[in-house]
Length: 349
Ligand code: NAD
Ligand code: WQD
Image (tube, rainbow, N blue to C red):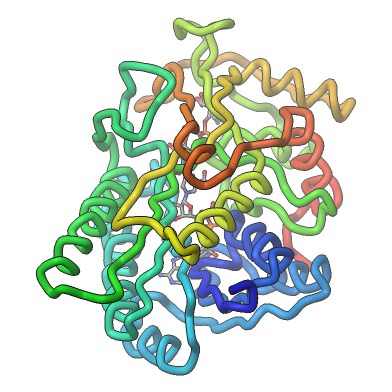
């Protein structure tokens, strides 16, 4: 099983590149397809340096049906991890059609190629954003789902589309049914401990951690903390930050489950988070203390669309996938800073 080939769409990106490392460590072969719209091939070269193993890479778009058909015709793919897509919430409000095209259409084309090749094991990158504005915390997988922006809606639409597949298997009496893990990530941060790969946003970062690291390294004058009057421990927003290496290992566990004798019966959602809520101020203070570096900040108005707090109950992933997040807040801030300080301009080489 361990020499099986895993197709990784979007594998040159932030979470994808870390997952390639963990797949290679676990003994899998990795084939990446990525159009490099939001990444650099350099990340995969560094994955090869870190692991001493080869990554097969095809530069291309997952929406290209001919390309996807040829990938499945030329390779025996044991399972596919689908990271490829667009992910910026604000941008999705300005260009919703691009988001539906890239996110929904890529999944549609991918699944058609998978079905044709009878290769029906899929791990899909979903997001905690599918819980909308949560009323009850921590979040379990069966809580109500909703979308507050086109990005989130694209993830919800994809989840619903994938949930239709097992029924089609029943009607067709398929002897190789779909087996799908929907992984709902909370807030990924951190980087590989080597400092060789990490998050490299091409524009001004939307997310907190790259904004902190770019401020600390001097690329930004100061961090704006959005809102200090939330009903939280110190008034700033609370999130469930998860180290990207823990997240990557969650993908390996999901693939191993798909390929195991028990498999996943149809479609199952899993929260991947630590279960701990951390406030923005707690994160900034932990970052400064661990790395002995200043992060100038100011408190400003709330960011429209933000929720006060969001954190996971990840019990299902522990029980069914044998996965728990193991890395600490100190690991997250240290590794984020190591990547940024060793690569102040990202993958520019
Ligand atoms: P990323 O932008 O670093 O990686 C996505 C990769 O997909 C990039 O390398 C990009 O070039 C590629 N890509 C985009 N569209 C493509 C297409 N049509 N064909 C081929 N390649 C394409 O983003 P990431 O942070 O690694 O996120 C990966 C996945 O996880 C995304 O689906 C995202 O929505 C989801 N996710 C991310 C977060 C987060 O905060 N980073 C949280 C929850 C879910
Ligand atoms: C975290 C906290 C901000 C930036 C988003 C998407 C979600 C998922 C992860 C993909 C909040 C505060 C941030 C800044 C700040 N992505 N903040 N100053 O909003 O929880 O989730 O990314 O699926 O879908 O919505 O993450 O990192 O943007 O914000 O004060 O410059 O940091 O207000 O409290 P968020 P984030």
